[in-house]
Amino acid sequence: MALLSDLINLNISESSEKIIAEYIWIGGSGLDLRSKARTLPGPVSDPSELPKWNYDGSSTGQAPGQDSEVILYPQAIFKDPFRRGNNILVMCDAYTPAGEPIPTNKRHAAAKIFSHPDVVAEEPWYGIEQEYTLLQKDNNWPVGWPVGGYPGPQGPYYCGIGADKAFCRDVVDAHYKACLYAGINISGINGEVMPGQWEFQVGPSIGISAGDEVWVARYILERITEIAGVVLSLDPKPIKGDWNGAGAHTNYSTKSMRNDGGYEVIKKAIEKLGKKHVEHIAAYGEGNERRLTGRHETADIKTFLWGVANRGASIRVGRDTEKAGKGYFEDRRPASNMDPYVVTSMIADTTILKP
Image 1: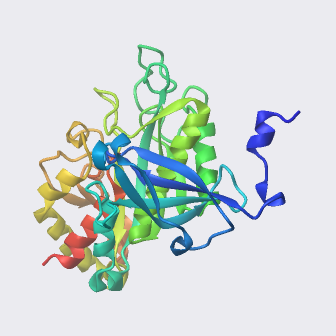
Image 2: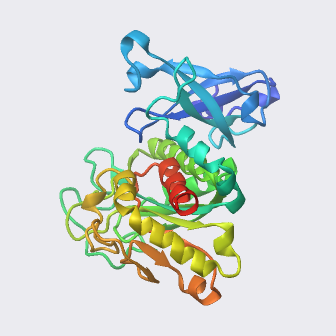
């Protein structure tokens, strides 16, 4: 008799050319990920080969019950690290049956910005540092923390090792390898300042692909935490008090910034971002005011400032960039629960397309 684990790990390619495609989309909260699977007759290499699909939008807060059909448009394909073989994960965005993007479809507007000729010419690169917190399932308290109590103060946990400093490393490492398997351009991981908090980095990725890769990396992480029995939190300030919050620092450069003389381009771009500070903050994640207090490596939410190697600034420019006279900068304002489609396209729009 086969064990359940044997059946889960069955290699269906040994008996069939059919594959399983897991369609992924963003639900009504703008942060909840949903997915469902369908069988396809054979391997697929491009989203244009995939059929559109529908789902019940009334059950995800995205359509009324009397007209609940929402249509999924496949946009990006990744290898499936859970089913493996030729099976795939498919990142989709959502439309009405008439072909109009639904209000929670932020990818559609981002794709318009990234397809603008001026943006295409600048080849915008992104590196997104996704911080997150792992919680105990039964009490929604960070892993490694005593139930109803607190660990020792911050200090030893950042990039720490040891059973009293690093918690759920198996989850984090499994996610790292699963993302590499999937084809996500994940560039690293590390333990963060607050115990139970970790970070992974995606990039450098160009244009709209940065958003696709971060969303699918989040999906894979939530699937792994489901298996492990812990809860993923993207709350920007999961614990009140003298504890670091969770952000999604967004590193950015254009071709002009990466070329000789790029430092002047960087400074002009930062000046543009400063003029649009209020608009960017409004789009950079819910609850960010609890994180951007001016403490714990943040600038105050009402203040825009930039500096070289300053982790208490809104925008940080690295020492290497200053020395080379070209490179990239880091927008430290986005919260951990930001929508990467919104943040990446907004930065490109403000720095490239706005006067």
